[in-house]
Length: 162
Image (cartoon, rainbow, N blue to C red; front, side, top):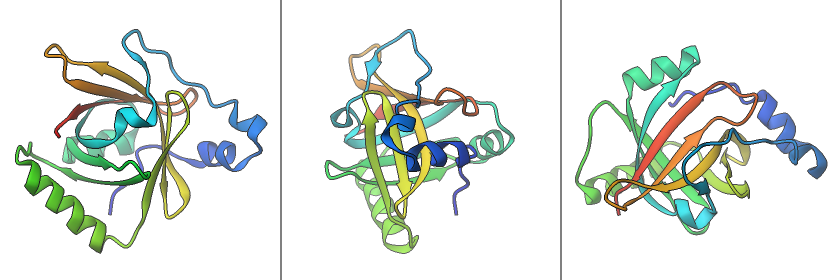
């Protein structure tokens, strides 16, 4: 249903390799914030891709400019994309529950190291990001997901909804 936002072959090779190779995963440094811990991402988030420098990511972000993502404390994760902003948190939660019940896939999230977020689909690496925790002008939690070093450029801003 959803297209992968980048070619994950290189990421999968590193994730599936021994721990020494996994240490080669490097983040692209950001000027703002600090590397995320998993506790920073737990909750309900609105996501918007603001930079996508890959044909598939550009097409997907133009068609579905917003994602709604839920990260659970146990590592469970679910998301959906839409072409319009949604504001009602219970409605967003219900849609996430409905997608989770019907999409046939299981999504998990884990922080491989501070600031390196891995998403798995049915146990296999699906997407990987640099994760930077920040706050917006009003002091509300925000995080920025960007590409891992050597992966296609992507920058996604997440805003906390719950």
